Length: 527
Ligand SMILES: NC(=O)C1=CN([C@@H]2O[C@H](COP(=O)(O)OP(=O)(O)OC[C@H]3O[C@@H](n4cnc5c(N)ncnc54)[C@H](O)[C@@H]3O)[C@@H](O)[C@H]2O)[C@H](O)CC1
Ligand SMILES: [K+]
Image 1: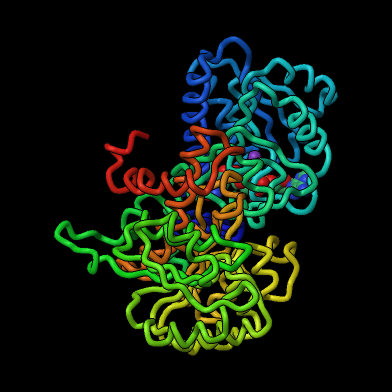
Image 2: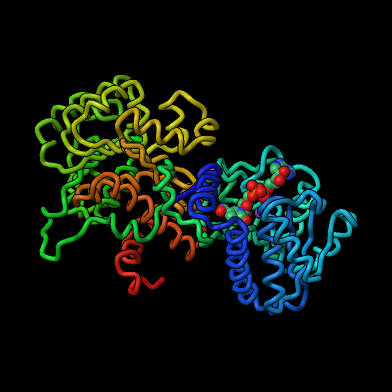
Protein backbone atom coordinates (compact mmCIF):
# COMPACT_ATOMS: atom_id res chain seq x y z
CA UNK A 1 0.00 0.00 0.00
CA UNK A 2 1.39 3.41 -0.96
CA UNK A 3 2.05 6.04 1.70
CA UNK A 4 1.65 9.55 0.36
CA UNK A 5 3.20 12.88 1.27
CA UNK A 6 1.56 16.27 1.00
CA UNK A 7 2.84 16.97 -2.51
CA UNK A 8 2.15 13.45 -3.75
CA UNK A 9 -1.51 13.79 -2.79
CA UNK A 10 -1.75 17.20 -4.44
CA UNK A 11 -0.26 15.87 -7.70
CA UNK A 12 -2.62 12.87 -7.74
CA UNK A 13 -5.59 15.12 -7.02
CA UNK A 14 -4.66 17.51 -9.77
CA UNK A 15 -4.11 14.71 -12.28
CA UNK A 16 -7.53 13.21 -11.51
CA UNK A 17 -9.25 16.56 -11.93
CA UNK A 18 -7.28 17.96 -14.87
CA UNK A 19 -6.21 14.90 -16.84
CA UNK A 20 -8.89 12.35 -16.00
CA UNK A 21 -11.61 14.98 -15.96
CA UNK A 22 -13.32 14.08 -12.67
CA UNK A 23 -14.37 17.41 -11.17
CA UNK A 24 -13.19 18.33 -7.66
CA UNK A 25 -16.77 18.62 -6.37
CA UNK A 26 -17.25 14.93 -7.24
CA UNK A 27 -14.13 13.96 -5.35
CA UNK A 28 -15.35 16.01 -2.40
CA UNK A 29 -18.79 14.38 -2.56
CA UNK A 30 -17.09 10.95 -2.63
CA UNK A 31 -14.84 11.92 0.28
CA UNK A 32 -17.80 13.08 2.38
CA UNK A 33 -19.82 9.99 1.46
CA UNK A 34 -17.06 7.60 2.55
CA UNK A 35 -16.49 9.46 5.83
CA UNK A 36 -20.25 9.38 6.47
CA UNK A 37 -20.28 5.60 6.04
CA UNK A 38 -17.47 5.24 8.55
CA UNK A 39 -19.19 7.52 11.06
CA UNK A 40 -22.40 5.51 10.75
CA UNK A 41 -20.39 2.39 11.52
CA UNK A 42 -18.65 3.98 14.51
CA UNK A 43 -21.87 5.39 15.95
CA UNK A 44 -23.48 1.95 15.70
CA UNK A 45 -20.44 0.37 17.40
CA UNK A 46 -20.84 2.89 20.20
CA UNK A 47 -24.36 1.60 20.74
CA UNK A 48 -25.79 5.00 19.88
CA UNK A 49 -28.45 5.62 17.24
CA UNK A 50 -27.09 9.08 16.56
CA UNK A 51 -30.27 10.88 17.53
CA UNK A 52 -29.58 11.48 21.23
CA UNK A 53 -27.35 14.47 20.61
CA UNK A 54 -26.23 16.07 17.36
CA UNK A 55 -23.04 14.82 15.73
CA UNK A 56 -20.94 17.99 15.77
CA UNK A 57 -19.04 18.71 12.55
CA UNK A 58 -16.25 21.27 12.94
CA UNK A 59 -15.45 22.71 9.52
CA UNK A 60 -12.60 24.92 8.36
CA UNK A 61 -12.56 27.16 5.32
CA UNK A 62 -10.47 24.97 2.99
CA UNK A 63 -11.35 21.75 1.18
CA UNK A 64 -11.16 19.79 4.41
CA UNK A 65 -14.07 21.90 5.62
CA UNK A 66 -15.76 21.18 2.27
CA UNK A 67 -15.65 17.46 3.07
CA UNK A 68 -17.25 18.35 6.41
CA UNK A 69 -20.22 20.06 4.68
CA UNK A 70 -20.87 16.90 2.68
CA UNK A 71 -20.62 14.72 5.82
CA UNK A 72 -23.09 16.93 7.69
CA UNK A 73 -25.61 16.86 4.83
CA UNK A 74 -25.35 13.13 4.28
CA UNK A 75 -25.59 12.25 7.96
CA UNK A 76 -28.67 14.44 8.22
CA UNK A 77 -30.21 12.72 5.20
CA UNK A 78 -29.65 9.38 6.93
CA UNK A 79 -31.67 10.59 9.91
CA UNK A 80 -28.87 11.57 12.27
CA UNK A 81 -29.00 14.77 14.25
CA UNK A 82 -26.14 17.02 13.14
CA UNK A 83 -24.77 20.49 13.70
CA UNK A 84 -22.34 22.02 11.28
CA UNK A 85 -19.99 24.48 12.99
CA UNK A 86 -18.11 26.73 10.60
CA UNK A 87 -14.95 28.15 12.12
CA UNK A 88 -14.37 30.79 9.46
CA UNK A 89 -16.31 33.62 7.84
CA UNK A 90 -18.48 32.16 5.04
CA UNK A 91 -17.02 34.79 2.66
CA UNK A 92 -13.65 33.04 2.94
CA UNK A 93 -15.05 29.86 1.36
CA UNK A 94 -14.19 29.28 -2.27
CA UNK A 95 -14.27 26.70 -5.07
CA UNK A 96 -15.58 23.21 -4.34
CA UNK A 97 -15.93 23.93 -0.63
CA UNK A 98 -18.16 26.91 -1.42
CA UNK A 99 -20.32 24.74 -3.70
CA UNK A 100 -20.96 22.21 -0.94
CA UNK A 101 -21.43 24.95 1.66
CA UNK A 102 -24.14 26.52 -0.51
CA UNK A 103 -25.83 23.15 -1.01
CA UNK A 104 -25.86 22.62 2.75
CA UNK A 105 -27.24 26.08 3.51
CA UNK A 106 -29.95 25.82 0.85
CA UNK A 107 -31.19 22.76 2.70
CA UNK A 108 -31.69 24.84 5.87
CA UNK A 109 -29.88 22.28 7.98
CA UNK A 110 -28.54 23.07 11.50
CA UNK A 111 -25.70 25.57 11.35
CA UNK A 112 -23.48 27.48 13.76
CA UNK A 113 -20.87 29.99 12.73
CA UNK A 114 -17.99 31.51 14.64
CA UNK A 115 -18.96 34.74 12.91
CA UNK A 116 -22.21 34.99 14.85
CA UNK A 117 -21.18 33.64 18.25
CA UNK A 118 -18.27 33.17 20.65
CA UNK A 119 -16.05 30.14 21.02
CA UNK A 120 -17.34 29.77 24.61
CA UNK A 121 -20.76 29.15 23.12
CA UNK A 122 -19.30 26.51 20.82
CA UNK A 123 -17.60 24.77 23.73
CA UNK A 124 -20.93 24.60 25.60
CA UNK A 125 -22.42 22.91 22.52
CA UNK A 126 -19.50 20.52 22.19
CA UNK A 127 -19.34 19.54 25.86
CA UNK A 128 -22.11 16.86 25.82
CA UNK A 129 -21.45 15.70 22.23
CA UNK A 130 -20.51 12.00 21.99
CA UNK A 131 -19.26 12.30 18.40
CA UNK A 132 -17.21 15.18 16.98
CA UNK A 133 -16.01 15.32 13.40
CA UNK A 134 -12.79 17.23 12.77
CA UNK A 135 -13.00 18.76 9.29
CA UNK A 136 -11.03 21.88 10.18
CA UNK A 137 -7.65 21.50 8.51
CA UNK A 138 -6.28 18.83 6.20
CA UNK A 139 -3.29 18.57 3.93
CA UNK A 140 -3.33 22.31 3.17
CA UNK A 141 -2.01 23.45 6.54
CA UNK A 142 0.93 25.83 6.47
CA UNK A 143 2.88 26.82 9.58
CA UNK A 144 1.59 26.71 13.14
CA UNK A 145 -2.16 26.37 13.62
CA UNK A 146 -3.75 29.78 14.01
CA UNK A 147 -6.82 31.08 15.81
CA UNK A 148 -9.62 30.05 16.13
CA UNK A 149 -8.53 26.50 15.19
CA UNK A 150 -5.84 26.55 17.84
CA UNK A 151 -8.29 27.24 20.69
CA UNK A 152 -10.81 24.70 19.40
CA UNK A 153 -8.17 21.97 19.07
CA UNK A 154 -6.86 22.73 22.57
CA UNK A 155 -10.39 22.49 23.99
CA UNK A 156 -11.07 19.24 22.11
CA UNK A 157 -7.93 17.59 23.41
CA UNK A 158 -8.76 18.57 26.99
CA UNK A 159 -12.34 17.26 26.72
CA UNK A 160 -11.99 14.23 24.48
CA UNK A 161 -12.56 11.63 27.19
CA UNK A 162 -15.43 9.28 26.21
CA UNK A 163 -15.88 11.11 22.91
CA UNK A 164 -15.44 9.67 19.44
CA UNK A 165 -13.32 12.20 17.56
CA UNK A 166 -13.22 11.42 13.85
CA UNK A 167 -10.57 13.27 11.86
CA UNK A 168 -11.37 13.83 8.20
CA UNK A 169 -8.29 12.99 6.10
CA UNK A 170 -5.93 13.69 9.00
CA UNK A 171 -6.08 15.26 12.45
CA UNK A 172 -6.13 19.04 12.12
CA UNK A 173 -2.73 20.45 12.97
CA UNK A 174 -0.74 17.34 12.03
CA UNK A 175 1.65 17.73 9.11
CA UNK A 176 0.81 15.05 6.52
CA UNK A 177 4.42 15.03 5.34
CA UNK A 178 6.46 14.97 8.56
CA UNK A 179 4.05 13.84 11.28
CA UNK A 180 4.95 16.92 13.31
CA UNK A 181 2.31 18.72 15.31
CA UNK A 182 2.05 22.27 14.05
CA UNK A 183 1.70 23.91 17.44
CA UNK A 184 -1.47 22.03 18.31
CA UNK A 185 -3.18 19.01 16.71
CA UNK A 186 -6.36 17.05 17.28
CA UNK A 187 -5.89 13.78 19.13
CA UNK A 188 -8.34 11.75 17.07
CA UNK A 189 -9.84 8.43 18.05
CA UNK A 190 -10.28 7.66 14.35
CA UNK A 191 -8.84 9.06 11.14
CA UNK A 192 -10.59 8.45 7.83
CA UNK A 193 -8.10 9.37 5.18
CA UNK A 194 -8.46 9.63 1.42
CA UNK A 195 -6.87 7.38 -1.19
CA UNK A 196 -3.85 6.19 0.84
CA UNK A 197 -2.42 6.73 4.32
CA UNK A 198 -0.19 9.77 4.69
CA UNK A 199 3.49 9.70 5.66
CA UNK A 200 2.76 11.75 8.76
CA UNK A 201 0.71 8.89 10.22
CA UNK A 202 3.89 6.91 10.79
CA UNK A 203 6.42 9.59 11.66
CA UNK A 204 7.24 11.66 14.73
CA UNK A 205 4.03 12.68 16.61
CA UNK A 206 1.71 11.10 14.02
CA UNK A 207 1.10 7.67 15.61
CA UNK A 208 -0.02 9.35 18.87
CA UNK A 209 -2.58 11.53 17.10
CA UNK A 210 -4.29 9.52 14.39
CA UNK A 211 -6.05 6.87 16.49
CA UNK A 212 -7.34 4.01 14.36
CA UNK A 213 -6.98 4.90 10.71
CA UNK A 214 -8.60 3.77 7.51
CA UNK A 215 -7.97 4.82 3.91
CA UNK A 216 -11.07 5.15 1.73
CA UNK A 217 -11.57 5.36 -2.03
CA UNK A 218 -12.73 8.70 -3.46
CA UNK A 219 -12.05 7.87 -7.16
CA UNK A 220 -8.46 9.16 -7.16
CA UNK A 221 -6.72 5.94 -8.27
CA UNK A 222 -3.86 4.93 -5.93
CA UNK A 223 -2.03 3.64 -9.02
CA UNK A 224 -1.42 7.26 -10.02
CA UNK A 225 1.53 7.10 -7.61
CA UNK A 226 3.12 4.87 -10.26
CA UNK A 227 1.74 6.72 -13.29
CA UNK A 228 3.24 9.94 -11.98
CA UNK A 229 6.52 8.23 -10.94
CA UNK A 230 6.16 9.42 -7.37
CA UNK A 231 8.92 8.19 -5.11
CA UNK A 232 6.67 7.07 -2.27
CA UNK A 233 7.20 4.56 0.53
CA UNK A 234 5.09 1.44 0.88
CA UNK A 235 3.24 0.28 3.96
CA UNK A 236 3.71 -3.40 4.76
CA UNK A 237 0.42 -5.35 4.69
CA UNK A 238 -0.53 -8.92 5.63
CA UNK A 239 -0.53 -9.77 1.93
CA UNK A 240 3.01 -8.43 1.46
CA UNK A 241 4.19 -10.58 4.35
CA UNK A 242 2.38 -13.63 3.05
CA UNK A 243 4.13 -13.09 -0.25
CA UNK A 244 7.51 -12.41 1.37
CA UNK A 245 7.67 -15.39 3.71
CA UNK A 246 9.98 -18.09 2.35
CA UNK A 247 8.00 -21.06 1.01
CA UNK A 248 8.51 -24.32 2.91
CA UNK A 249 8.69 -27.65 1.12
CA UNK A 250 6.75 -30.33 3.03
CA UNK A 251 9.37 -32.88 2.05
CA UNK A 252 12.28 -30.63 3.03
CA UNK A 253 14.93 -31.70 5.51
CA UNK A 254 17.02 -29.59 7.87
CA UNK A 255 19.50 -28.89 5.10
CA UNK A 256 16.74 -27.43 2.92
CA UNK A 257 16.00 -24.65 5.39
CA UNK A 258 19.44 -23.21 5.75
CA UNK A 259 22.10 -22.97 8.41
CA UNK A 260 22.35 -19.67 10.30
CA UNK A 261 25.41 -18.64 12.28
CA UNK A 262 25.05 -16.16 15.13
CA UNK A 263 28.26 -14.58 16.40
CA UNK A 264 27.89 -12.64 19.60
CA UNK A 265 27.98 -12.65 23.37
CA UNK A 266 30.52 -11.44 25.91
CA UNK A 267 30.99 -11.94 29.63
CA UNK A 268 28.40 -9.24 30.40
CA UNK A 269 25.86 -10.22 27.73
CA UNK A 270 25.02 -13.85 27.48
CA UNK A 271 21.28 -13.64 26.75
CA UNK A 272 21.48 -11.56 23.57
CA UNK A 273 23.06 -14.14 21.22
CA UNK A 274 20.79 -16.81 22.64
CA UNK A 275 17.70 -14.73 21.83
CA UNK A 276 18.93 -14.33 18.25
CA UNK A 277 19.62 -18.05 17.88
CA UNK A 278 16.32 -19.04 19.42
CA UNK A 279 14.45 -16.59 17.17
CA UNK A 280 16.15 -18.09 14.12
CA UNK A 281 15.07 -21.58 15.19
CA UNK A 282 11.52 -20.45 15.93
CA UNK A 283 11.35 -18.80 12.49
CA UNK A 284 12.24 -21.89 10.55
CA UNK A 285 16.01 -22.08 10.12
CA UNK A 286 17.04 -25.73 9.60
CA UNK A 287 20.17 -25.40 11.74
CA UNK A 288 21.48 -22.63 13.97
CA UNK A 289 25.02 -22.39 15.26
CA UNK A 290 25.88 -20.02 18.05
CA UNK A 291 29.50 -18.84 18.12
CA UNK A 292 30.27 -17.28 21.51
CA UNK A 293 33.26 -16.64 23.78
CA UNK A 294 34.22 -19.94 25.37
CA UNK A 295 33.87 -18.49 28.89
CA UNK A 296 30.10 -18.14 28.51
CA UNK A 297 29.54 -21.25 26.43
CA UNK A 298 28.77 -23.67 29.33
CA UNK A 299 26.00 -21.43 30.67
CA UNK A 300 24.41 -21.11 27.24
CA UNK A 301 24.72 -24.73 26.20
CA UNK A 302 22.52 -25.80 29.09
CA UNK A 303 19.73 -23.48 27.95
CA UNK A 304 19.35 -24.24 24.29
CA UNK A 305 19.48 -27.90 23.32
CA UNK A 306 18.41 -27.24 19.73
CA UNK A 307 21.39 -24.96 19.06
CA UNK A 308 24.80 -26.09 17.84
CA UNK A 309 27.64 -24.32 19.67
CA UNK A 310 30.95 -23.05 18.45
CA UNK A 311 32.96 -21.85 21.47
CA UNK A 312 35.57 -19.28 20.46
CA UNK A 313 38.73 -17.98 22.19
CA UNK A 314 38.07 -15.18 24.68
CA UNK A 315 40.14 -12.16 25.69
CA UNK A 316 39.09 -9.80 28.51
CA UNK A 317 35.53 -11.11 28.36
CA UNK A 318 35.16 -10.50 24.60
CA UNK A 319 35.89 -12.59 21.54
CA UNK A 320 39.63 -12.76 21.01
CA UNK A 321 41.42 -11.64 17.86
CA UNK A 322 42.27 -15.26 17.01
CA UNK A 323 38.57 -16.24 17.12
CA UNK A 324 38.73 -15.28 13.45
CA UNK A 325 41.19 -18.07 12.68
CA UNK A 326 38.77 -20.60 14.13
CA UNK A 327 35.88 -19.09 12.17
CA UNK A 328 37.77 -18.69 8.91
CA UNK A 329 37.77 -22.36 7.93
CA UNK A 330 34.19 -22.91 8.96
CA UNK A 331 32.36 -19.94 7.48
CA UNK A 332 31.50 -21.61 4.21
CA UNK A 333 29.25 -24.04 6.12
CA UNK A 334 26.70 -21.34 6.82
CA UNK A 335 24.03 -19.79 4.63
CA UNK A 336 23.70 -16.61 6.64
CA UNK A 337 25.43 -14.79 9.48
CA UNK A 338 24.27 -12.52 12.29
CA UNK A 339 27.00 -10.62 14.03
CA UNK A 340 26.58 -8.29 16.95
CA UNK A 341 24.10 -9.39 19.63
CA UNK A 342 25.83 -9.01 23.00
CA UNK A 343 29.23 -8.83 21.30
CA UNK A 344 30.45 -5.84 23.33
CA UNK A 345 33.13 -3.49 22.02
CA UNK A 346 36.85 -3.76 22.44
CA UNK A 347 39.87 -1.91 21.06
CA UNK A 348 40.57 -3.28 17.60
CA UNK A 349 37.02 -4.66 17.35
CA UNK A 350 36.30 -2.60 14.23
CA UNK A 351 39.20 -4.20 12.35
CA UNK A 352 38.10 -7.60 13.65
CA UNK A 353 34.64 -7.06 12.24
CA UNK A 354 35.94 -5.69 8.95
CA UNK A 355 38.06 -8.80 8.52
CA UNK A 356 35.08 -11.03 9.32
CA UNK A 357 32.97 -9.23 6.71
CA UNK A 358 35.68 -9.80 4.12
CA UNK A 359 35.81 -13.50 4.95
CA UNK A 360 32.05 -14.07 5.07
CA UNK A 361 30.73 -14.72 1.56
CA UNK A 362 27.10 -14.99 2.60
CA UNK A 363 24.33 -12.56 3.50
CA UNK A 364 25.20 -10.87 6.80
CA UNK A 365 22.99 -9.16 9.40
CA UNK A 366 24.92 -6.64 11.50
CA UNK A 367 23.21 -5.61 14.73
CA UNK A 368 23.89 -3.95 18.08
CA UNK A 369 27.59 -3.68 18.99
CA UNK A 370 28.44 -4.86 15.50
CA UNK A 371 26.98 -1.59 14.22
CA UNK A 372 29.01 0.49 16.65
CA UNK A 373 32.20 -1.21 15.50
CA UNK A 374 31.26 -0.86 11.84
CA UNK A 375 31.31 2.94 11.88
CA UNK A 376 34.89 3.37 10.64
CA UNK A 377 34.54 0.62 8.06
CA UNK A 378 31.44 1.66 6.16
CA UNK A 379 33.42 1.94 2.92
CA UNK A 380 33.65 -1.86 2.96
CA UNK A 381 29.96 -2.33 2.49
CA UNK A 382 29.36 -1.42 -1.16
CA UNK A 383 32.28 -3.65 -2.13
CA UNK A 384 30.78 -6.82 -0.67
CA UNK A 385 29.50 -9.38 -3.13
CA UNK A 386 26.68 -10.59 -0.85
CA UNK A 387 23.90 -8.62 0.82
CA UNK A 388 24.36 -6.76 4.10
CA UNK A 389 21.43 -6.00 6.36
CA UNK A 390 21.95 -3.40 9.10
CA UNK A 391 19.43 -3.11 11.91
CA UNK A 392 20.15 0.10 13.88
CA UNK A 393 17.84 1.74 16.39
CA UNK A 394 17.81 5.54 16.18
CA UNK A 395 20.76 5.87 18.61
CA UNK A 396 22.87 3.44 16.57
CA UNK A 397 21.83 5.15 13.33
CA UNK A 398 22.81 8.53 14.78
CA UNK A 399 26.22 7.13 15.75
CA UNK A 400 26.75 5.65 12.29
CA UNK A 401 25.99 9.02 10.72
CA UNK A 402 27.66 11.23 13.29
CA UNK A 403 24.27 12.91 13.78
CA UNK A 404 21.92 13.36 16.75
CA UNK A 405 18.98 11.10 17.51
CA UNK A 406 16.73 14.15 16.98
CA UNK A 407 18.11 14.59 13.47
CA UNK A 408 17.50 10.93 12.68
CA UNK A 409 13.97 10.99 14.07
CA UNK A 410 13.03 14.13 12.16
CA UNK A 411 13.79 12.51 8.78
CA UNK A 412 13.55 8.74 9.24
CA UNK A 413 12.41 8.03 5.68
CA UNK A 414 14.98 10.25 3.98
CA UNK A 415 17.87 9.16 6.17
CA UNK A 416 17.12 5.46 5.76
CA UNK A 417 16.73 5.80 2.00
CA UNK A 418 19.93 7.79 1.48
CA UNK A 419 22.03 5.58 3.76
CA UNK A 420 20.86 2.35 2.13
CA UNK A 421 21.56 3.69 -1.35
CA UNK A 422 24.90 5.23 -0.50
CA UNK A 423 26.26 2.13 1.25
CA UNK A 424 24.52 -0.52 -0.84
CA UNK A 425 22.82 -2.13 2.17
CA UNK A 426 19.37 -3.12 3.33
CA UNK A 427 18.69 -0.86 6.27
CA UNK A 428 16.20 -1.59 9.03
CA UNK A 429 15.82 1.65 11.00
CA UNK A 430 14.03 0.47 14.11
CA UNK A 431 11.74 2.51 16.33
CA UNK A 432 8.06 3.24 16.60
CA UNK A 433 7.17 2.53 12.97
CA UNK A 434 10.26 0.77 11.72
CA UNK A 435 11.46 1.90 8.29
CA UNK A 436 13.16 -0.40 5.77
CA UNK A 437 15.23 0.81 2.84
CA UNK A 438 16.83 -1.17 0.03
CA UNK A 439 20.04 -0.42 -1.90
CA UNK A 440 17.80 0.51 -4.86
CA UNK A 441 16.08 3.22 -2.83
CA UNK A 442 12.80 1.47 -2.12
CA UNK A 443 11.34 2.30 1.29
CA UNK A 444 8.86 0.33 3.40
CA UNK A 445 7.12 1.27 6.65
CA UNK A 446 6.00 -1.26 9.25
CA UNK A 447 2.55 -0.30 10.56
CA UNK A 448 2.75 -2.68 13.54
CA UNK A 449 4.51 -2.76 16.89
CA UNK A 450 4.54 -0.63 20.00
CA UNK A 451 6.29 -0.09 23.30
CA UNK A 452 5.94 -3.76 24.30
CA UNK A 453 9.06 -4.17 22.16
CA UNK A 454 10.94 -1.42 24.01
CA UNK A 455 12.90 -3.92 26.09
CA UNK A 456 16.40 -5.41 25.95
CA UNK A 457 16.42 -8.51 23.76
CA UNK A 458 13.88 -7.32 21.17
CA UNK A 459 16.53 -6.34 18.64
CA UNK A 460 18.38 -9.62 19.09
CA UNK A 461 15.19 -11.50 18.28
CA UNK A 462 14.61 -9.44 15.14
CA UNK A 463 18.10 -10.14 13.82
CA UNK A 464 17.55 -13.87 14.36
CA UNK A 465 14.25 -13.83 12.46
CA UNK A 466 15.84 -12.04 9.53
CA UNK A 467 18.68 -14.56 9.44
CA UNK A 468 16.21 -17.46 9.47
CA UNK A 469 14.18 -16.10 6.57
CA UNK A 470 17.33 -15.39 4.55
CA UNK A 471 18.65 -18.88 5.38
CA UNK A 472 15.40 -20.33 4.01
CA UNK A 473 15.95 -18.56 0.72
CA UNK A 474 14.11 -15.26 1.01
CA UNK A 475 15.72 -12.31 -0.77
CA UNK A 476 16.93 -9.70 1.76
CA UNK A 477 14.11 -7.26 1.00
CA UNK A 478 11.49 -9.97 1.45
CA UNK A 479 13.21 -11.25 4.59
CA UNK A 480 13.22 -7.87 6.30
CA UNK A 481 9.61 -7.12 5.29
CA UNK A 482 8.42 -10.40 6.79
CA UNK A 483 10.67 -10.17 9.85
CA UNK A 484 9.78 -6.71 11.14
CA UNK A 485 6.07 -7.42 10.67
CA UNK A 486 6.05 -10.87 12.30
CA UNK A 487 8.22 -9.59 15.17
CA UNK A 488 5.84 -6.69 15.85
CA UNK A 489 2.75 -8.83 15.39
CA UNK A 490 4.09 -11.34 17.91
CA UNK A 491 4.70 -8.55 20.43
CA UNK A 492 1.23 -7.08 19.88
CA UNK A 493 -0.35 -10.47 20.46
CA UNK A 494 1.66 -10.91 23.69
CA UNK A 495 0.65 -7.42 24.87
CA UNK A 496 -3.00 -8.19 24.19
CA UNK A 497 -2.67 -11.02 26.71
CA UNK A 498 -0.24 -9.65 29.30
CA UNK A 499 -0.21 -5.84 28.80
CA UNK A 500 2.48 -3.80 27.12
CA UNK A 501 4.29 -3.50 30.46
CA UNK A 502 4.95 -7.16 30.95
CA UNK A 503 5.97 -8.64 27.61
CA UNK A 504 9.37 -10.36 27.84
CA UNK A 505 11.65 -11.39 24.98
CA UNK A 506 10.88 -15.00 25.85
CA UNK A 507 7.15 -14.29 25.33
CA UNK A 508 7.88 -12.77 21.92
CA UNK A 509 9.96 -15.80 21.00
CA UNK A 510 7.05 -18.08 21.82
CA UNK A 511 4.59 -15.89 19.96
CA UNK A 512 6.57 -15.98 16.71
CA UNK A 513 4.98 -19.26 15.67
CA UNK A 514 1.37 -18.10 16.21
CA UNK A 515 2.18 -14.80 14.47
CA UNK A 516 3.52 -16.63 11.41
CA UNK A 517 0.50 -18.91 11.48
CA UNK A 518 -1.86 -15.93 11.51
CA UNK A 519 -0.31 -14.83 8.21
CA UNK A 520 0.04 -18.16 6.44
CA UNK A 521 -3.21 -19.61 7.71
CA UNK A 522 -5.43 -16.87 9.20
CA UNK A 523 -8.32 -19.29 9.68
CA UNK A 524 -6.29 -21.33 12.18
CA UNK A 525 -4.57 -18.45 13.94
CA UNK A 526 -7.20 -17.87 16.60
CA UNK A 527 -7.14 -14.10 16.06
N1 LIG B 1 -7.10 14.13 -1.50
C1 LIG B 1 -8.06 14.47 -2.33
O1 LIG B 1 -8.06 14.07 -3.43
C2 LIG B 1 -9.09 15.35 -1.88
C3 LIG B 1 -8.97 16.03 -0.72
N2 LIG B 1 -9.91 16.84 -0.25
C4 LIG B 1 -9.73 17.51 1.01
O2 LIG B 1 -8.99 18.67 0.79
C5 LIG B 1 -8.07 18.85 1.85
C6 LIG B 1 -7.01 19.79 1.47
O3 LIG B 1 -7.66 20.99 1.19
P1 LIG B 1 -6.96 22.43 1.17
O4 LIG B 1 -8.01 23.39 0.83
O5 LIG B 1 -5.78 22.35 0.31
O6 LIG B 1 -6.45 22.63 2.61
P2 LIG B 1 -7.14 22.52 4.07
O7 LIG B 1 -8.58 22.25 3.99
O8 LIG B 1 -6.29 21.58 4.80
O9 LIG B 1 -7.05 23.94 4.76
C7 LIG B 1 -6.34 24.88 4.29
C8 LIG B 1 -7.00 26.19 4.65
O10 LIG B 1 -6.67 26.54 5.97
C9 LIG B 1 -5.86 27.70 5.98
N3 LIG B 1 -4.67 27.40 6.75
C10 LIG B 1 -3.51 26.90 6.29
N4 LIG B 1 -2.65 26.76 7.29
C11 LIG B 1 -3.27 27.19 8.40
C12 LIG B 1 -2.86 27.32 9.75
N5 LIG B 1 -1.64 26.95 10.13
N6 LIG B 1 -3.73 27.80 10.64
C13 LIG B 1 -4.96 28.16 10.28
N7 LIG B 1 -5.41 28.09 8.98
C14 LIG B 1 -4.56 27.61 8.07
C15 LIG B 1 -5.53 28.04 4.56
O11 LIG B 1 -5.82 29.39 4.37
C16 LIG B 1 -6.44 27.18 3.70
O12 LIG B 1 -7.46 27.89 3.14
C17 LIG B 1 -7.66 17.45 2.16
O13 LIG B 1 -7.06 17.30 3.42
C18 LIG B 1 -8.97 16.71 2.04
O14 LIG B 1 -9.68 16.77 3.26
C19 LIG B 1 -11.08 17.06 -1.15
O15 LIG B 1 -12.19 17.40 -0.52
C20 LIG B 1 -11.39 15.82 -1.94
C21 LIG B 1 -10.29 15.50 -2.78
K1 LIG C 1 -9.07 17.29 9.68
